[in-house]
Amino acid sequence: MKASTERKIIRWVHILFSIPIIGFIYGPVAELPYAANAVRFLFFPVIVLSGLWLWKGQWIKKHLLN
Image (tube, rainbow, N blue to C red; front, side, top):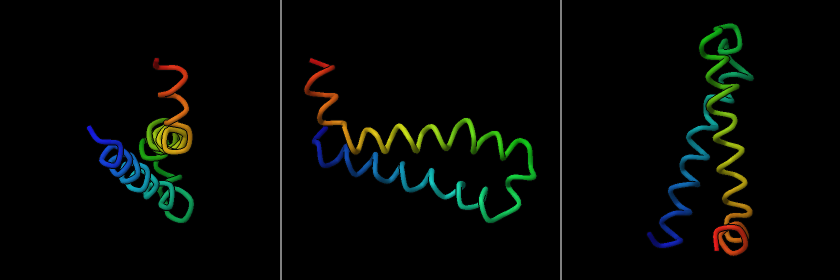
């Protein structure tokens, strides 16, 4: 896979998984236990990991995976 394609996919995952955070902050999602747990334990970690990969992915590939 080309680097530009990988970056586009990760960027869209990062953006799409950020949408439930808005519902958690401004909507009634925080009051629903299953939805709140999904945001806390699924969506937020994926957002953090994808953001770190977008930021430091080149360094990780260069230093840790070789």
